[in-house]
Length: 273
Ligand SMILES: O=C(O)CCC(=O)C(=O)O
Image (cartoon, rainbow, N blue to C red; front, side, top):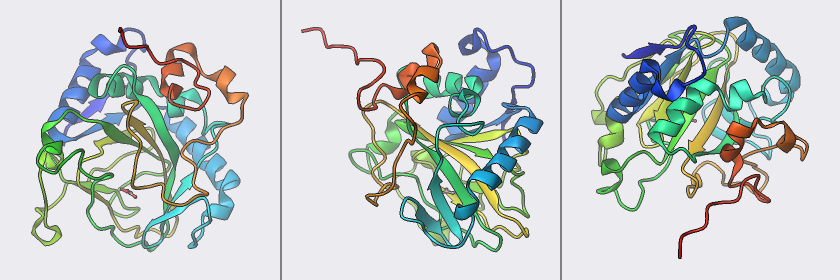
């Protein structure tokens, strides 16, 4: 599997860097990108502690009203955009955003933010894409990406804790039969690395055979006109959770990520008429 190492890569002029170009090419061609060293290991260990502390009520085999069960012993929960988990280095990591802006659009938005918790003993998910085809199954695989999932594991993802199994290239498939799929790729994602996959890519959370939960922070980045139609199906689920004061803390160059939010930080550009 292709991996791109961002250790020590300066964050200015990232769009022109060979690393961002390589990650974007891999994403467009294979439907995924693995980015190593996007955050220091110690920072992510701190995020894990914070998660265990702030979200301890969610680390259980039950579905709270604001959460969604996404498999056996596996839950998608909202994360409040505050504290370390809500820091710009997480929701707007410069390396990740540089790739997002190349593979989606310079005006891509943060559509949803939360965590997926795979509890000890969770079973494999059914292989799935994150959303239905755009327009039609014949057209969707031909199009550029419209949305992607960012996954930042808070513990190493491997054969024991479980990883996200991927079927590279499947974002270009018109259809698939679960029982005819080839063997997937099962990347090890160390603490401090992350995984991006196209919303159309077939993937599956692998079983957690360890004795502890395996949480991952996730974000959905999307073209501004797209709203995930599949993963927010309960009234109490919220895509983004933040206090009004959060708005002022968003770095200016990251404000376009919130351009779709009610009372948007940035107006859209008017059409020339
Ligand atoms: O748990 C994982 O590794 C992936 C979860 C996932 O793909 C999903 O819930 O859609």
